[in-house]
Amino acid sequence: MNIVVSEELRKACPQFKGAAVFATVENTPYSAELWDEIGKFIAEYRSKYTIDSIKDMPSIQATRKTYKICGKDPSRYRPSGEALCRRILKGMDLYQIDTMVDLVNLASIAYGYSIGGFDADKIQGETVTLGIGKFGEPYEGIGRGPMNIEGLPVYRDSIGGIGTPTSDNERTKMELNTKHFMGIVNGYDGNKEEVMNCAVYMKELITKYCNGSEINIVEF
Image (cartoon, rainbow, N blue to C red; front, side, top):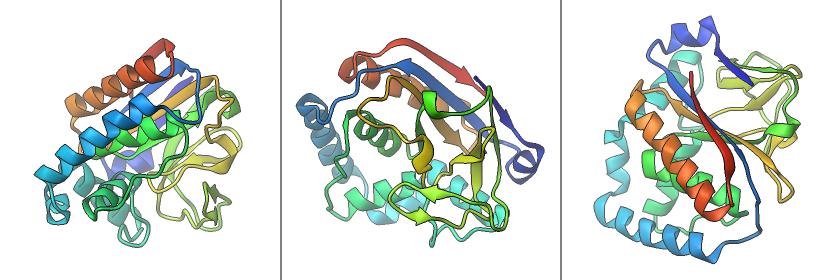
């Protein structure tokens, strides 16, 4: 599958770096071992950072800046990476959905990047393009219903939007029967090394907790 960054997005964020992780996976409802790792990570994370620390995280601040340039209020439509970090730094528990979603959330918190997680078999066509949402463009966010994506960075397949940094689309979401995974790390800060580190970390988690195989990482 090809992933293309449109000229309009490049104009808004010339430094953007992305990485896609493709894998064959075995998803499960819950992994006690993964949640043990998540618990230890969160405890260490809370010992190092506070809510005020978020303003100093380049990955989060760069995403917020891009939202503003594209025409969206990042405080009203929070990027998922920021929302997850805020949640745990407020002392709240992390959502428990299923093993694939849970490990993507862990990788997102660890690096501060918003990560799209998709069932690759639900994506239509051979190319996914990163652009900017248009007025009236139909989009159903996971657990959100119809969502206004005007001014949001958005990945589109041949049918329409599949993912934004705020919420992925119901149409292409991961489920327990997902066999082929595509995860996208969004580096609006342009830090190629950290984007790749995040992708490699996700690969390690998939291998460890979802019996991942045929794993491939693609830069774009």
